[in-house]
Image (cartoon, rainbow, N blue to C red; front, side, top):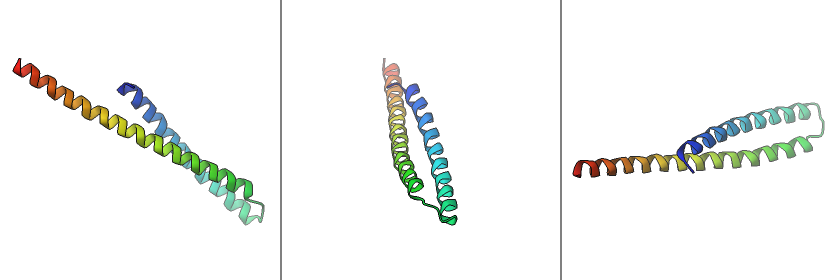
Amino acid sequence: MDKQLVEQYLKLAKQHVAQGRRHITRQKQIIFVLTRGQQDTSQARGLLSTFEELQLMHVAERNRLQKELEWMRRHDRVTERYEQTETEAG
């Protein structure tokens, strides 16, 4: 995968993490309101659990992409140094 594509995917993954955080916060608010009204929270809690599982996946994907991008940047620097050394030696 090329660096620009990884950067685009990383940007999207960060958006997913932020959106997931908002969903989880909102779902907790819903559960609070339902609990306060002494209503059944089982579906709301199930949905919260799903949101939390998805969030773990979003965070893992974001972290994976960050590591891949860091590796690409380090590799680019090594390649640049090597090419510079070759040019100076040539």
